[in-house]
Image 1 (tube, rainbow, N blue to C red):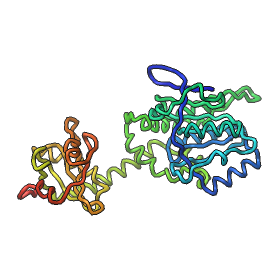
Image 2: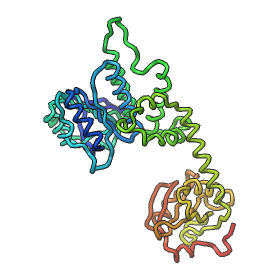
Image 3: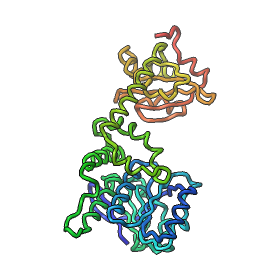
Image 4: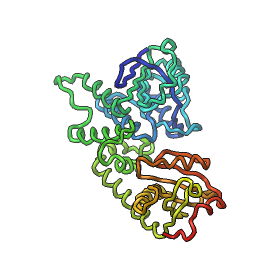
Length: 366
């Protein structure tokens, strides 16, 4: 048994399981059957439609392609009814199964290892999986799990396959980089942005816009339905994604600003929590975050609490979303008092119409 666990305080070995994520489509089953006929020695399962999962699959693809090693790369999704079964993956000649950016349940791992007689190598970075750690004495030697709380799965997988690639000595005594030199800097910058989001650091410039720009690629992260996926991933540019994300954010801000024409005062909790500015946004619920933040600023400038209240009908219920751009303000105290919840800067709750009417000031147009 092998197992790596890293964080900023210590380095130790750990084992654990996690809820399986799978995509058991006809195309996947056909690909597995063909791999069994060809006695393909390596299967790569990657988290779909995760950014880290897709890029992890890219590095596995590059390694096996560089060295002409047959492999089958399959996406795993979160749809329970489509989850792969251990029996699906026990193909003839299987030697190694890579599990990238997710961890299946312990039973799945153990069954796959014992029934296929293959080595299973897993990568994940999520702290939440630690609660599933079983006793190290229960795990066989051929299951290896790399958990790194300070590095996203895609970065860890990149380093793993780059190191494995460098260990291969060519007839000239030289080994080219896993990622072509013309793409290397661009790919590594994207990995830094993915890691910034995966680890919830949100510290890089334009990180929010980057994730928005990249999100439109999620539907293309299935390498079975999109045979050009790996080529497309290599061509992605962080700067372009940030520009696209900023354009999207700007468009939403402009759309939200247009809805602020009929602002009124809201007496939060009938005035117990003070007053702020609000607006009805029926039909524009998707813009509630942007509208609320604009209202928060406007409300503070008007001498009211720095909170924006966005109200709209949702499935025959009246919903109120509270937003604040002020770090010292806690909107959730209001939401929780009325059966809702959220964070200090963003919360929501369902409010009865008769109660809501008590919150709207007389002559409340603002």
